[in-house]
Length: 213
Image 1 (cartoon, helix red, strand yellow):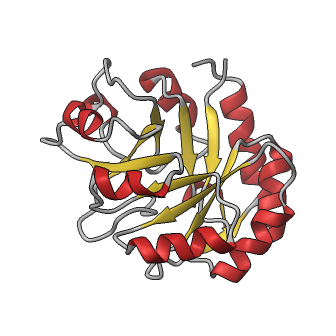
Image 2 (tube, helix red, strand yellow):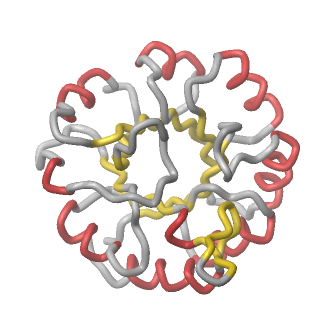
């Protein structure tokens, strides 16, 4: 069995279709205005509507209000919510929608306690801790900090790309992996944040498909 794949930070319909056609399981739409991968509600609605069946649409929020989440849900066909800030379990669970809780991992973070606190989540998404930045940094973290007996499904994120995703799957045995910057296009050496590279997506998927969980 292979790990599931979510490709996050989608801002264009063409990129969403490339993700779907690659065989990825989910796309992530970022509703955090400070992110370079932020997408408007109108554009997000178009992206979600353009996707074929059986591709999960995940909406990512960071420390926003319940009214904002509900406004987005009213306009965009989201299947899952992802909370990437300091949200409480009560906040995350109020929308009658499956949710993922992102945890930024560093030494001293008790992931077993996080799993207990957010036991209503579908999964914990583990990302790198970079001070002042809630996610999408392209940084990785020490995978050995992840306990083997985590009681929730695990989504591995943080600095994944074609060069390390197979190693991450072999070491961590996650339910799924999440990638954003690792499959983005570049203008020379400068990354084009929010613009995906189809060839990188295809190579990433090949690595995942060839690595058993």
